[in-house]
Image (tube, rainbow, N blue to C red; front, side):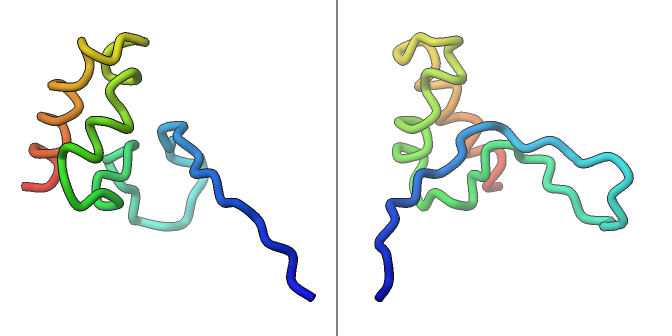
Length: 70
């Protein structure tokens, strides 16, 4: 019998691990590639980009998505 679990994504920006043997490290701590549309990304991350203020951060988050996806 399988137990159902609700997945809650970790919204903490990722930091490189020291001593990693991998030569790959994403310079994007917000995983913009997980979002198909800038509106979705901005809605999710607006408060982070606005230091707790959704309205202040929405446009910055939107612009960040666009710059990382280019």
